[in-house]
Length: 255
Image (cartoon, rainbow, N blue to C red):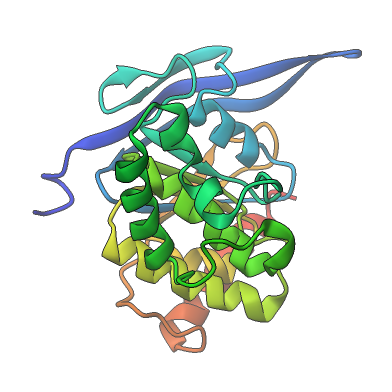
């Protein structure tokens, strides 16, 4: 099925977000228009503090737009829902639960029977490569392993959309590269529409089908790039380096 034939999954139309602050108002998002197709991997890339996290929170339903509309699969976003899984930079695992307990938590809250939720949780624990760590607590896991648990937990509710807010930003460089490779493998195995926030241009080019370059705050789409490089991508290929140079020059102009 071609990209044009795939159904639209996320639609943002004229989205703006303004927060009340002591000085008055602070507009963070301005006239943001965006459509994602089913199973696309999209990176939101832009300067620091430009509003990327606010966009994730709006699509997740944690915040409401000041103006404009957001829909997922044709349904208006009015709050959080099981059709959207979220993975944050700050790892928010329950320290008193094991890997299995954390991954199956959403299903437990939803009232899924123990046998079924264990089966589904095990599937995604296996998918992220944590076999043998089902009974480990977060304190016993490395940073990369904790993020794998977070990804498995988000996947376990089987959402249509995965929202990832700089999930590898706190990891060391070597672990970050490993997690980029792992996420690409997981996405190709269990396709989802992924909206991935990053301020690392190499990460964006390595992962994305499309990159939306955002302007400085208030954020709007400055330019869009369709990444046609074959996978797995090589950071040192001439095509990769040329894209890196072009996109970096676009972003620098916003600062």
